[in-house]
Image 1 (cartoon, rainbow, N blue to C red):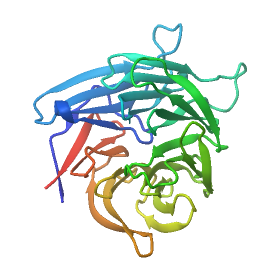
Image 2: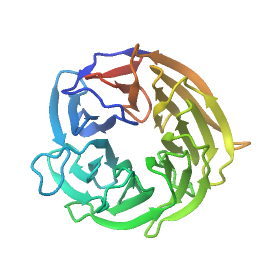
Image 3: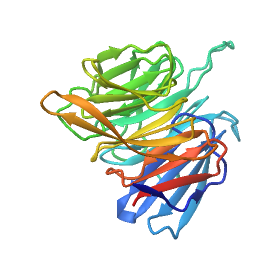
Length: 336
């Protein structure tokens, strides 16, 4: 179903972080941007669709009044809002927001660090655009920071702080199907496996809490009102987001899941884990029962590789890309 394409070389290898791959498709320019985190650097590659041109850029973690920051980067993710695309980078010190090509930093938000050292690590992780103008970023205290983003310029403001989690945020996702019928349009996950379901707006509302089992939920997606969550057990669970009803539980991988992605137009689901496997599934909603069915379609083995990032490169799932710990390349697959 999929075959391997020529890999894209990157300047540094990928760190072992959840969801360590960002992909942004720039259709008017026939380009795709990729980001991979290595320690305190984000490796960016701009790749032309014909495979002939690649350009590289590296973004360093930053902090005020320090020439070169050593603070580790936790995640880099693209946020596609209706009016603009941005790149958000989170670290142990703060949140950096760039233009999507990484050329200009438009906003910096410092994290609150305690005056006296504590056992609790401080970092930001979990990034998602939601609604027309919001970017949500999670942190190690379990809070979600909501930033209001103008259609242009750098006048970004912190508009809200959402409290629903007691443990560190691992991932945040918005409704990806584009459906306006969904009651809730944002979901967040934490290190205890707990999920919170939200409705965005001038005032964000929490609709539901789906309890975890004290095992980390490493990656989460929201598609047509269905929450898709990947766990450290290697399982994927599908819930009705607003009610918390469990539709399906799949023993998908033998080790920790590091990344999930959904191709919103086709309902294809991508899962990747420490067990060297990337699997492609198909989700379908049965209208008569409103239940969700899962079918396994394909898998690829990246031998001896702890996979840490996997993303579809388009909304139909015709191609996907994969990163692995200590690999200095982005591996690509396309449909045959």
